[in-house]
Image (tube, rainbow, N blue to C red; front, side, top):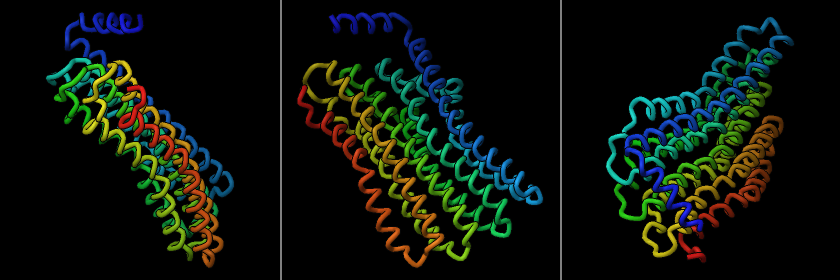
Length: 346
C-alpha cells in the first residue's frame, strides 16, 4: 500500500512539464535558503545590544564602540548574503533549468542546495556574539581597540568556515552535480541529493562554538593585551577542534554525491532511498558537539588571558573536554557510514 502511494505521488508529479517540476523545486530551494537569515538577525542584534549597553556605560567611547560593532556586524551578515546569492541564482539564473537527467534528481538537487545554506545559521550567530563582546570590550578598554578588533576579525573568519563549505556544496549541486549523470534509480539519487544538503546542517554547531571562542578571545585581549599571542594560539587551536563535526558533515555530503554505495546496491528502492536520506540527517547530530567544543575553547581562551603561565595545563584540559564532547558527533558519523556501507536492512 505504501509503495502504491509513493508511486501515485511520483506519477502525479511527473504528469507536469519537466521545467514546471524543476521550477517548483527551485522556488522551494530559494525559500529554504533564506531561512539562514535567522542567524544574522540574532547575531547582529546581540552585537547592537552590547554596543548600546557599552555606550551607556562609557558614552565618551561611543565612536570606537560603534565602529567596532558595525564592523563585526557586517561580517556577521556574510551567511545571509551567501544565502541570498544562492536564492537569486535559483530564481533568476538557475543552471538546473537546462540540465539533462532525471527530473526528480534535478529537482531534489535544487531543494538540497537551499537546505545546505541553512548551515549559515551557526556562523552568523557566532560572529554576532564575537562582535558584541568586542564592542563591549572596546567600551571598557578603548586603548586596546586594535588588538580587540584583530582578534574579533580573525575569530569571525574561522567561524565562517562551515558557511563557506555549505556554499561549496550548494554550488556543486547547482553547477557540477555528479548525480544527474549517474545511472540508477531516480528515487535513490533524489534522496541522495537531499541527504547531502541536510548533512551540511551539522555545520551550524561549529559556527556558533567558534564564534563564542572568538568573542571570548576579543574580550581577553582587551583586558590583557600582553597575552595576545597566548590567547590567539588557544583560540585558533580550540576553534580548529570545534570545526571537526563540520568537516565530518562535509565528508558525508561528498560521499553521498560522488561515491554513494547505495546507488549500486540491489534491494528495496524505498529502503535505499530512506537510507541515503537518513545518512545525511544523522550528521545533524554533530551540532551539539560543535557548540560544546567552541564553549570549551572560549573558556580556555578566557583562562589563558588571566593565567598565561599555565597555558599548557589549560590547553590539555580543553582538548580532553573537547574530545569527550566530540563523542556524539562520532556516533552520528558511525551511523551514517553504517547506513551507507553496512545497512542490515538491505
